[in-house]
Image (cartoon, rainbow, N blue to C red; front, side):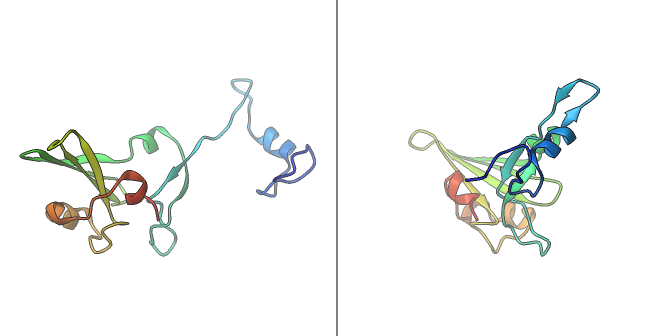
Amino acid sequence: MTSISKTGKTETGETLQKMFIESYDREFNQISFELLGYDPLVRNEAGEVVGGLQRVTIKALGDYVANDIEEAGNITYIGFKNLDGDYFIQKIDSTTGKSIRFATIINNASKTSYSTAWAGRATLVYDTYSTAFTV
């Protein structure tokens, strides 16, 4: 467990006092904190999908945009892509109730672009969110 004191250092190597001083917003006279969220499709310097923390911003909340929608009987496919080219395809099956599954580059490694994934959407591997987005 991390030792927390005004002078002790945390895992970041910064003292809590320094972190609080640097997080103070003088304009609004408030302590400000940075909200971080886990993005399962964050890439490392080599371009490999590794997942990681990312700042939560207005852009991050709406990072993926629906590009295509296809309804085929009881199956609906919705293709999403972000500005970095990362994608996921959502498959909604209403044959027996509602089932929502996801296809990503993580569970479809040979589909390295949105266009190839969308073209092959009927044959992709779909899984639950926790599986499809976990490295």
